[in-house]
Length: 421
Image 1 (spheres, one colour):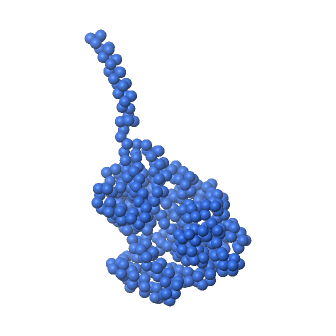
Image 2 (cartoon, helix red, strand yellow):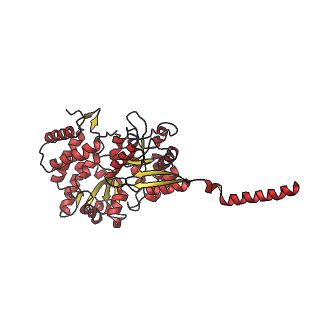
């Protein structure tokens, strides 16, 4: 027995060691996977950091750019077989999807998102909840706006490029119009205060068009009509179309003084269009506090990987270490005011002449009006109101009464379910 037992022990131990070499715990663990869809590629950075923190989770990222994204997403959610576990929703589409049954209720346990979103700005929280108050999507992007201005032009025509002093000179549209008349004349029509009329109208986007199933035309939208017409008549506008070659070139050449824009404009508008103007820009408060754009992230309610999906969503929105890295490395202003407030005293932008832009946007975000948007707003604003506004600006429509009549007609045709007086 003893002679047989001893070599057997050696053999068993050797076999176990051999098995350990070939089948270590790490090699036995199968990597889990989730699929994430978005309409931009900006999530790439977050995915890289997430996979570093959770090496046992692989994220299959699908970027579907363009206008087909929302159509393809809706189709995938309805057919269930090819739906992503996690998906991004643009601000313009959030209200049309927030009440559909395909978005997981993140207020429920184990997510308890109502507690977590208290770290976010109020204007972001307003659109994260469905009609019953349940969180269905979480906005990870902070998008307050301000007025980007050329420091060299400010020094020349305003006598200063200091953000506080510039802000005090442009806190009303009348002041901006007066500056616009002055610089247009002194520059021989080469410099204008604003690039186009959208610089004015975009400063008020977000005011809801519908309440309790009824069209409501906020008086602010009618005031904007007069502002844009006056701006043209006083030669304040350079008349560049948004996104055009002339619009992009105006930033590089210094042909426009003021560009109202949101946080993301720093990266995707100014640095992209005017890379050689680093240090020549500043940020100041303008006539109105506003927000523009934004992206939300949601979970598919029928996903069989909800635990992994939630890890990704929670990481993207509430992991302070990651959000700090995102802010510093990507110059990305998030919706998390706790992180932004911590960074505000120290984080500055060389592109903005060393200005503490997180400090600026952190304060601006707390002043953004809180609106609960409706699923009708984006279409009414972009496809009806702004078209009519252009007609009014060109005097193809003469009076505001005609504008109101036209808006009501077009809303009735597009959305017959709405009550229109």
